[in-house]
Image 1 (cartoon, rainbow, N blue to C red):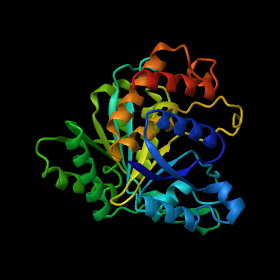
Image 2 (image 1 turned 180 degrees about the vertical axis):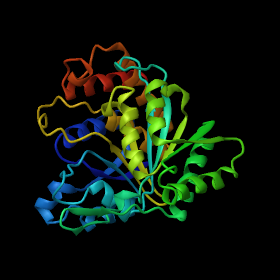
Image 3 (image 1 turned 90 degrees about the vertical axis):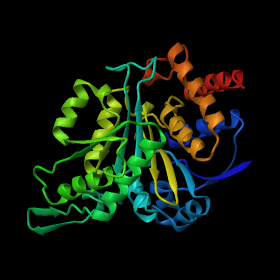
Length: 336
């Protein structure tokens, strides 16, 4: 079977790690017809748009996409491509599995949690303005519909993947109306899933407890802003953003992505680590039903990292992107 998938290589190190992932997937015997599209700076230079219609049409047609990192200007310039894609395609659930991996230096060895983040509301709606000279306002939007929808997603995910507990993270002690609605919606949906433990925690207490003992958490459910912050914090507990996958999922479409930056300082030097995008691609393969290939690639990456003889510089090794990829492919084929 041949799958059709939209590919956004991204910019910076994006095209390099994207090519690595394509080779890895191909070596596992998965047939994919890639529809390459541009976004962000690359697309802006070509078409004058950061998220062109052709890109959105491609994802709507194929219903699934793999995306490399794309630059978002800080404090100026164009709106985040990630945010735009999530809003245009209603990719309301951001999924970040966070696992300890042997061979990757980290503070903890048995972390295995999943972060589910509401992707379309909160402060990330981008509704802000200067209301008077020197005074700005940003509006936090929380709706009952979106709150119930993301809670339903989290419980169904937990049920499907044999997860036993969901912790809703909030600041309802201060934001009693907005986060209060988020919390109450969660409790309402939780009643439908009596087999799953449902509790909640204030976000600052959650951050402290994550650092003290992340192994006691299973599934974390958060709003958009807190989810963005906590998911990066959790990645730091297992080795950083270079080894953590990400997915943006809606009812009709899904975009799988590396959650790290574009690293323009090393772009083109063939030293970038493709692991995060590979792990994101494994989530994509499972959605496509290619579970055997996903398992084989996962085991090959884990073994390669554990042995430690072929690692990129960020993981303490000296291999180039190409050398690391070639080693993964040898391991994958040895398991074929």
